[in-house]
Amino acid sequence: MSDGNSGVIVVGCGMGGMAAAAAALEGGAAVTILERAPREERGGQTRYTEAYFRMKSEREVTDDFESYLAENASGYIDPSLVHLTSEPRANWPAVVKALSFIDPEWIATFAGEAGPTVEWLKSFGVKFDFLPTQFLTRSQPRLLPIGGGLALIEALAAFAEKKGAQFVYETAASELIRNAAGAVTGVRAVARGGTVREFAGKAVVLACGGFEGNAEMMTRYIGPRSIFLRPVCRGGYYNKGDGIQMALDIGAAPCGDFGSYHAEPVDPRSGIAEPSVFIFPYGILVNQEGQRFTDEAPGTVDAYYERITRQIFSQTRGIAYAVLDRRHTGIPNYRLGVRSDQPPVEAATVRELAAKLGIAPEVLEQTVAEYNNACRPGEYKPLELDALATHGLTPRKSNWAHPLDQPPYYAYPVISSNVLTFGGLKVDSQARVLNKEGDPIRGLYAAGEILGTYYGNYAGGTSVLKGAVFGRIAGRDAAALK
Image 1 (cartoon, helix red, strand yellow):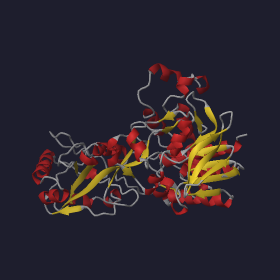
Image 2 (cartoon, helix red, strand yellow):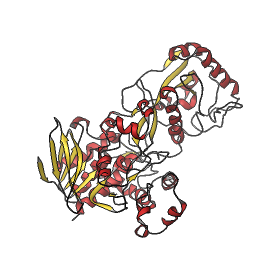
Image 3 (tube, helix red, strand yellow):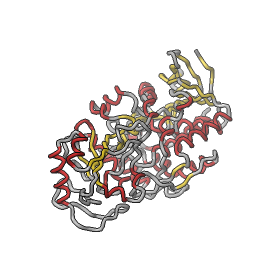
């Protein structure tokens, strides 16, 4: 079944897809939006997130924005190839253009277009503010849309509906269609019930996320321990990696760390979106064996939670327990650090707590005693780095190291969620998908989490912003394509 020429076809209804659709409509193109989810769940992962933007004002990104992305822009690359990137991109050899790393020009575009993109989003009625976050301590500011990611999706979707965009729900793109010259001219998709449909257009924008919801790809790329991960929210289950696979099948260049993902600590007992547990710096983390395994507080929680969560993922069954005493309940707004809807496990003694957690009581008692003995007197400042560290303990705790000696005792189970996968497609600063020679594939664009952007560490507050910036660029460029 063919649906005719739709102008610009957008695959995915999250931030990247909706920004692309709105920009293409503003550019005068007819737009068709394919969405795997039903209408009431449209919006991908954006729908469920607070949508932090790594910005110090509505016009400026944070001071570390470009440097942090650049520092985490690749794995080890031959220095002789890196040296060639000092030349204008047009002068790069093909091997460098298609390398799995983030181009300096792309980073500069991201930073430079963030402010104008926020102003653009405001034109749809979205408002922004520096609201309280779940990070009780932080090193960088976070700008938030009032109403979170859902407000972004609903504002852009309302505009798209008003402008006559066609939304096709419960329909998943499965294959890119090309003409004899190799340009992308549409997609083949599978609708509810297995019906195959074809959508023709002058350009396709892939904005259908990573592969968090695809068990086979997770095992293939992340490894067999991926069974201990789960998407951070319901929207992640719709991300099957289709867009990545479709593009790779026609020769697109991969980018990003396919073997990694953005890790966030969550309570496995909770079924709500993003049931995060960021309170652990004020206690200790122990594994199923009752042993500490990491420095719980090397710095502000926003800067270090991902690295700590990866260590949780490496423990037996991918789980740990944040053990606290009554002292943490005196921290101002401490509840902001726990988004779980489940109460902590509570006990009058450490021994009783261990029994409830299924940990050998004598081991947890010894672990807590050794930790308490390593704590030293000092001024406790829970909302700033206080350098109150343990002494003679391995691993050490660098901040907020007070004894756990004020009953009752509490514990939150913590696992690593998979917020987004790092591996994806390589694009240029115009959001055009590149082939393995580093040249744009005509008619094919990508935006959002499908872009391979991160290596090693996620740059907090950049995912939804990246979808907005490059979705807008993709839609604008696709609409102008002749």
